[in-house]
Each structure stands twice: as structure tokens, then as C-alpha cells.
Image 1 (tube, helix red, strand yellow):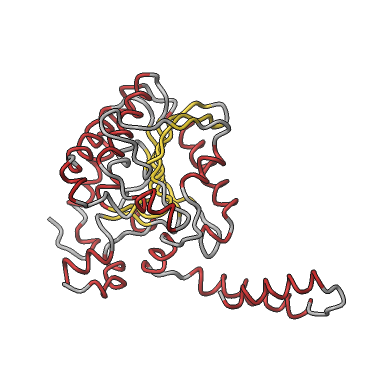
Image 2 (cartoon, rainbow, N blue to C red; image 1 turned 135 degrees about the vertical axis):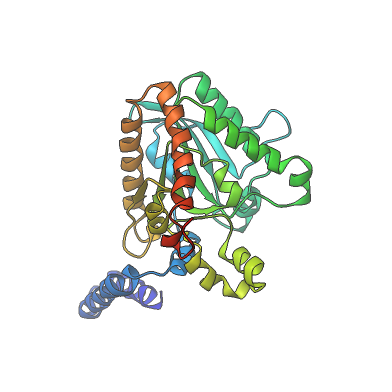
Length: 318
């Protein structure tokens, strides 16, 4: 980052003072940055990808929605308690296809993160999502979910209002819908908070996103009683897009620019939109009953694959 900052200062200075002859140094720094990307940033560990998934400059859900849709109409409230700003939902037009989009939204700064509760939904957020998905089912609109959350909010108020029940209702409802459902993990996919929007016909995942039962810190705390071993935990959790594709839990990896989505947000948005449109086109050939049946079979196959392939994961084959 120091090199990038130095490069930016040199370019700004060069623009202000035309006679300054720093072109050679600027080009040298650009070359060094590209070499660094090609070497260090193409050989990432699982923990590196966790850090990239959490990067504050990574594109958030609203940026994907604004790029993909021409006239997104946000719909708020669960009709039971209140609106939860950590989940954004509504109707949008993607290249002529009217879809329902539901997304987990992180904040851009401290105030926005407080408003969005750091993308950790309360029960009313999941109930809002279910209300909008029920509406999509009624009007035969495909459902697209964008997942980026550390997990559902674990606070006392959320538990009192039925956090677990709200998530469970979403899981059951999504398994029974007869419209195409596409889930895209764009950053963190943590625990049941992510799975509540992840029961889909096809699961897509950005290259440096992560998807797991809990955070590496939580995993290390439970297993080893030491959150400082999070880096080690990430390596054994099989949470990267490549791990999950190999395990047949996700269906497609969406390529990111070298170094992460934040290096070229526009390219990331283009790749994601193209992947969604391609997947949606593939799903539209199926009948309603077939979409539902295929979704059931997808999750049955995940359990079957894991049960009979423990040897590939370092366990015992049963």
C-alpha cells in the first residue's frame, strides 16, 4: 500500500508540475506493482482470502444492484416489527428480466455500519426477505440473493424475537419455491445468517469470497480455545471458493481482478452480472416443478458427497 500511495503522490505532482521529470520513476513503480500482483497476489492462502473478503474497499451489495439493474425499487419492512437496514430487498430489471433481489449490505463507514448493524440481520430482516420471496413466488419472478455477512446478529433482542425460527422459516420456504433462485456470495458468507438466503438452485461465489459455518476466529475459539489461531483455522475449514467448488457445494466461481475485487470494482461488477445472466438463462429452461426438484436434489447430493468422501478431506471413509 505504501508503494501505491507513493505512486499516487508522484502522479498528482507530475500533473501539477509538467516540467517535473518523474515519468521514469512512475513507470518503474507501476512495473513493480504489476510484478507484485503476478507473484504474491496469485498465491493466496485461505486466510489471505478471508482478509480480502473483509476488505473495506471491496464492492458492497448496493454497488452490484446499482450496476446490474436499471430501476431498482426497494421495498422495506417485515409487516410485523420494523425494517432491518442490514438486508436490502426489492424489484429490479436486469437486461429486461424482472427479478426480486435480496442482499446483505455492509456499511461504507462507521455511521453506515451502525445503521446496517455491520450486515448482521435481526429476525425482522429475514422476515422481510421471506415476505419479498413469497411475493416473487406469487408473481413468478426469479430470486437473486447477494450474500455478505459475518452471520446473523446474536444479541438478546434478536433471540427474544425469534432469530432461529426466522432463519428456519427462510430455509423451509426457499426449499419449496418454484421460481429460479440464484445466490451469489460476494464477500463473507457466515453461518446461518448467510444460509438463510442461500438455499438456491445455483450458488455462485466471487473468487476471493468465503463461505463457512462460522468465522475462523469463532472456529479457533471453539476448537482450540484460542481465537489467535484463526489463520490456522482458515486453512482447515475449507471455506474458499476453490475448496467449495471441489466439494460441489457451490456451482460457479466468478473471477476477480488480481489482488481482489477492490483493485477493479467495475470488472468485478461486469463479471458478476454476466455470471448471473448466464445462470438465469440456464435455469429458465426448467419447469417450476423441475426447479424445485433440482433444488432438493442439490442439497441431498451435498450430504451424499461429504458422507462418502471423507477420505478426500483427511477423514475416514464410511
